Image (cartoon, rainbow, N blue to C red; front, side):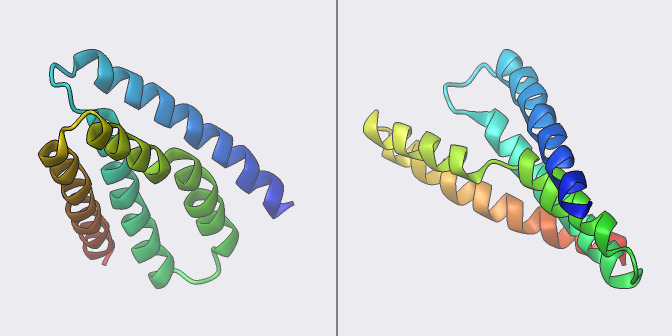
Length: 120
């Protein structure tokens, strides 16, 4: 039964990612793909919050797996970020590609740490 919950949550996470990415893309005036950055940073923040909460509240393994692996697994999209970085490189925008990749890494890591700290 757990795998059904995880799969359903993954589908909901993917739908949420699409909606947020689309909303950001409509408002983005830059030629840099910011939607993926917003999605991945918020995914890391939420995963940090969930991880911190899960570490302090044992016995909720199915909930943590459903939300973490399912919803946030479907919501986050680091593979898309890799493709966007490659496209920026192919468009000979090396500096933008580097800032995009390193910036997303640093922001995502900081967001995850903040989430764990906030949950404590």
